[in-house]
Image 1 (cartoon, rainbow, N blue to C red):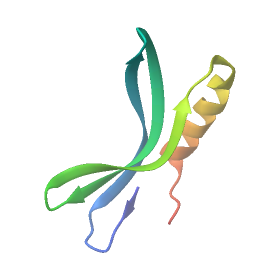
Image 2 (cartoon, rainbow, N blue to C red; image 1 turned 90 degrees about the vertical axis):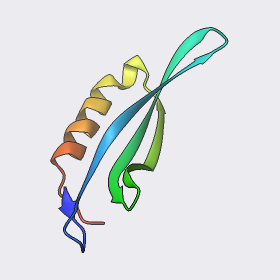
Image 3 (cartoon, rainbow, N blue to C red; image 1 turned 180 degrees about the horizontal axis):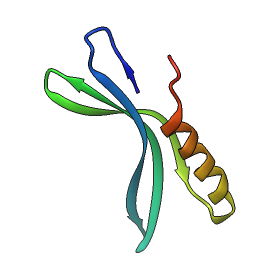
Image 4 (cartoon, rainbow, N blue to C red; image 1 turned 45 degrees about the vertical axis):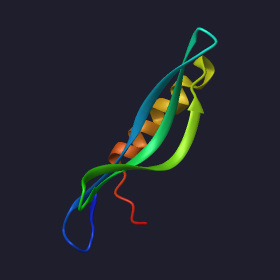
Length: 74
């Protein structure tokens, strides 16, 4: 997490979105940033990651670990 000019904290995390298409369930993933605005907390989509396939499971775990431990500046 990093602090912006006003001292508030920003965080990024993976957000799961579930939809039903043609009677079948689908799970999609977004990389989102948590922000505070005058109207309260909001999520800003940083990247759309799409559906996770079983063959990508270990890569996603690595990505999630990196995101939660990263202290990068943008």
